[in-house]
Length: 255
Image (cartoon, rainbow, N blue to C red; front, side, top):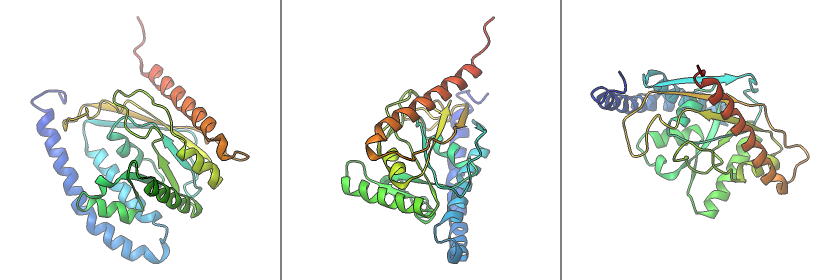
């Protein structure tokens, strides 16, 4: 029924309106929570978790989306990791926000210009990045290193942009170089099934079952910056294999 051209567009419009309402309602919550917790939440861990709760709430009320989390690892919530995930859809952010631990994101400057939402992202400890601006990128990486030094995890989409067709692109080295320099493990997240949730250049949601697989961490002890390309390739291979396993498990049995 959700695929019906009579149902999907108006229901999608209602859901987008709901997103706006959630952002408006969450703004005073973020403000007062930040003021109340500031003395013991200097690293913005708790307020960041509250911000992610708003995205998780939006995901729960969206009838088009069904999220599955496969986690046999159960990472320590206050041990810093560099999380890396493949990126194929706008939906990925909501799926990752539904995970039960805090991670600090990099986001495009344009997203920070969205009224109220951009302010919440700043308060939550998100960082702006301007593509092609080397100084901005270097400053963002220094701030991410500071987050890691304060026992906060950070997350990257190392492909750099969303895949247009859901296929896995090449991984850039930045996240892996940061992990090596900070002496923290890389924790891969494999996302499968999200690419069709919101087609490019469309605002109409599509019924989607998306899965995120939490993989065991990849250690960086003993590695140098020169090892970043090999580490990136190794993690990409692990994510690709996890995606293939989920794909095989969801394939219909042959008759």
